[in-house]
Each structure stands twice: as structure tokens, then as C-alpha cells.
View 1 (cartoon, helix red, strand yellow):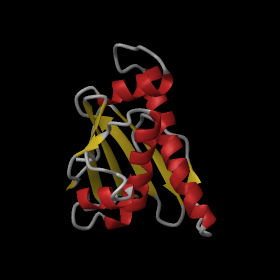
View 2 (cartoon, one colour):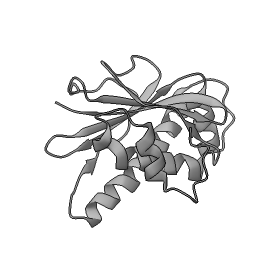
View 3 (cartoon, one colour):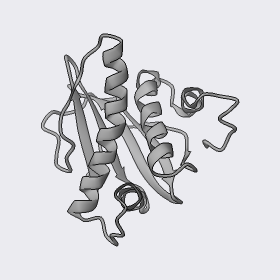
Length: 167
């Protein structure tokens, strides 16, 4: 859980402890997302240990692709009300169901976090293109054994951040 004294550790050090073995390539991206959640949605955001899965979630999710030679995709998916809670807090809305507008707000949150990550890379000389976020099927399949999920508790509700490499 993130419930440690962040003055004693950086957010990156905290997130590193939550990644499954093999998840290290996604550390900076996941850290950027968690920092964005803490700043814009819930300073009390908590996280559980990450794990690898075989496929992206089938329903109630928003994705965004970062394109370059290989490409990455990030995905926010429902846990137990976390997407709606994050959408409402981020947008200042009070929706009661996960509508298209709520998914749009989640997409903007994802875009904000990915923008932080992509900007940091560009300062180091690496350039990625952020494609618009969406709640539809991906056009390109993801590589097997690269789908890393981190359960996050936001405003007392669970959602999942997923990062994977495109084929």
C-alpha cells in the first residue's frame, strides 16, 4: 500500500516495491500515473501489489496508446466503482453511472498522466506520440506476457491501471 511516509521514500521507490518481477520497464510510467492520481484525484490513493495478466479487460475501460517503434498502451479499468469515483472527482461531476461522459473524464485523466510521462521522456531526447484516449477495442494486439496490472484504491473504490506493449 502507499500508506508509508513519502518523505522517507520517493514515489518511484514506493511504486517499485509494488511491481511484479518483470514489471520494471513500466516503473516510470506507473509512477507518473500514481503521482497524477495523488495530485488531482485523491491524496490518500492506495495501491496493491501488481501482477501480470493474459489479456486486457473486456468491459468498462479506457485506453491510450503511446506510439513509437514498439508502442505502449495504458488502460484504466473498473474494479468496484473506482472509475466512476475518479471520473467524478477529476471532472467535478456527480454522475451515478459509468456513462460516456464519465469514461471521457477518465480518458482525460489518463491523458494527463501519460502526458507527464511523455514530457519527461522528451526532455531526455525520446519522443512518443500520444494518441487520443478511447473506450473502444484496440486496433493492435498487445504482446503476450507484457500486461502488467496495478490495483489502485481511489476515494475508497478500486480501479486497475494496466500497462502493456503493443505487437
